[in-house]
Length: 411
Image 1 (cartoon, rainbow, N blue to C red):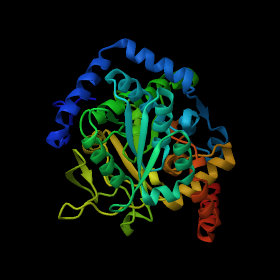
Image 2 (cartoon, rainbow, N blue to C red; image 1 turned 30 degrees about the horizontal axis):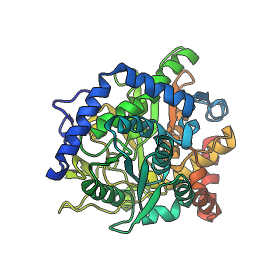
Image 3 (cartoon, rainbow, N blue to C red; image 1 turned 90 degrees about the vertical axis):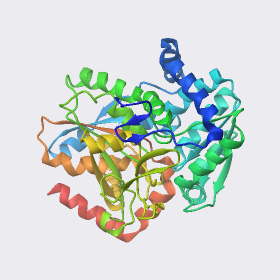
Image 4 (tube, one colour; image 1 turned 180 degrees about the horizontal axis):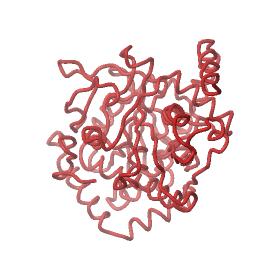
C-alpha cells in the first residue's frame, strides 16, 4: 500500500479524533510501528496462528461448481476453517499480542454479524483480558448464537439501542467507552476502517490470507488466479486477500458489496458499487459514506449483518477511485441462491457475508473460458446465520427465485 502521508490513501483516511484520545493513538502508533520493524513479532504471530488457529487455511478446488457452470475453474480460500469460523481471528489474535506488549488489561470491540465479537472474546479468554463487546440491538437479535458464545467466553455483550441499532452505532459506543478507559483498555477495531493506524494495521494482520493464497495457487495450479472475489463490508477480508496480489496487473480484484433489495430501492449497503455515496468524515476517518445532503448517515440494509455498514475502508475507497479494484453489488436474493448452490454442490456452508462474493463469481464464471482461474475468499462459515437462512428458505419468494436461478445456470 502506498500513501502520500501517514494514514492517507489518496484523499482518504486520516485520524480525526477528539483531543482526549490523542495520547492513546500516539501510544498505539508507536507500538504498531515497533512491531512492524520487529521480525520476531510476525514470527510469533504466525506461530500462534498455526498452533491455535489452524493456519494456513487451505484452498479448495470447487470441481463440482466448475463443471456445473462450464466456464472458469473455481477455487475457494477457506477462511471458514479458521478458528472461530471466519477471517476475524487473524486480526484479533495479532492485536492481542500487541495488547500484551502495551501492558493493557482490557479489550473492547464492536461487532455486526458477531464473528468479530466472538473472535475478540476468544482472544480475551486466551490472553486473560477483560472484554466488553458492543453490538447493535438489531444485530443482537438476528445473531443470537454468536451472542451466546461471546457471553460463554466471558465477554460482556452490550446491546446498543442508539440510531439504527446496527454496526455504525456499535462503533460509536465503543469509541465512547475507550474515551473513558484509555489507561487500561485497547479498542480492537474489527475492520480496515477508523482512524490511523487501524486501516493499515488490520490490513497488515489480515495480509496473512493473501500471502498464503499466493503461494497456494502457484503450488496447486502453477499460476496466479485471473480474478479474485471478496465480499466488502468494512473491507478486512477483502484487503487481506487482495494484499497478496496488488502488484500483479494480470490479477483482477473484485469487491462485492451488499445490494440488499436492489440498488434502485435505496435499501442496500453498497457504498462504492451504487454511486450513491459521497465523501465525508465520520468515526475518525475520511472515506465514502452513504449520507444525505446534510451529511447525516443514511439507513442501510442487508440480509448479512456484517455488511450492513454505512462507510467503507479508506483504502478501498482509494482503490475504487484509481480503478485498482472493481466493485459490484449482490442482492439478497442472489446471495441466497449462491448460498444454496454452494451447499448443494460442494457441501460447504458459507456465511451470508461470504455468499456475496460467491454470488458475483457465479454470475461471471459461466461467461469465462475454462482456462480462467478464479479465487473466491470464503471469509466465514454459515453456522451463525442459521436462523436468518432458515427463515429465508421457508419464504416462498426465496424458493421460487432459487429455482429460477438454478434453471438459468443449467441453461
